[in-house]
Image 1 (cartoon, rainbow, N blue to C red):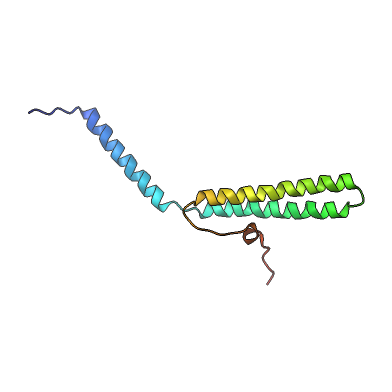
Image 2 (image 1 turned 45 degrees about the vertical axis):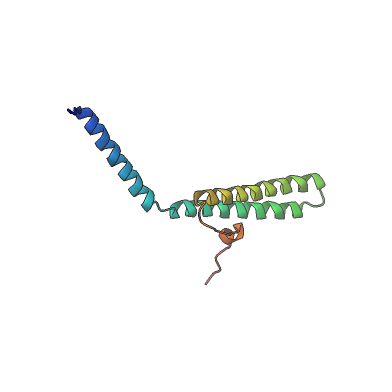
Length: 111
């Protein structure tokens, strides 16, 4: 029985094995902290805007149409906050993280 292998077949299998090994190595050391920090910043911005526009709607209660416009913008930012929370959950689907958007939008108290 004679076995013949071409050099390009050997090289392609070696390259495949190295690629899989590197992918597994990167997958294990993948740190999601930068993603969470970025999403936390987006959540804080959305929270601040939602609160601001909600206050503007209360300020313009005398003009019903204007108040509805401000409330609609505030609701849009509240919805965006929930979307970002869904993205955070999608990043780590196996972790059971019962979190609320308020956990990420608390303002640090001054010392």
